[in-house]
Image (cartoon, rainbow, N blue to C red; front, side, top):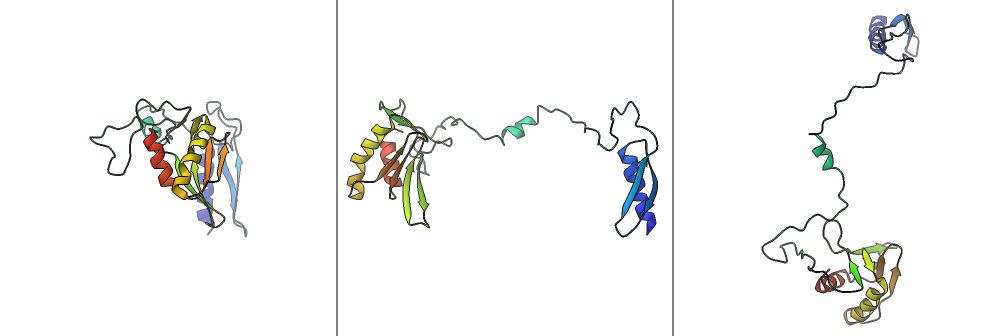
Length: 187
């Protein structure tokens, strides 16, 4: 049983550096291989510490970088694809060109969707609608929502405005109605 461990020790010592040699290999309860350096590392190797592995060689390939670019997330909205008619089968509509002349704007998400989302918390008992990516006068949008939403939900909605994160949170699930309203405005 000592022979296989001795071979492993010799293989390891030859891979560490040319100056390494195995002096002895013992097999106590915990298998330990005692290797020592017989000669100093060669000058052409350039390593001062023989236990540190040499830095691997690498090849810089600019042709293969196109595969890496696919993994990097896009931060800009990609150009809008052309379709023969709108809305598309999935219901997507492009933003109006030129954009509407309002004191605020609702920027699309990076995948060209209107940024209106539903949010559930407290075990699903708190239901909210969130509008994100609001630029400009966020308070003007809040006033227009206060005029628009009572006709839909039958009461004055509780609306929370966060200027720092550019979000409006509406109490209740009115995502589809708000999304349709923003699309009619041209966002």
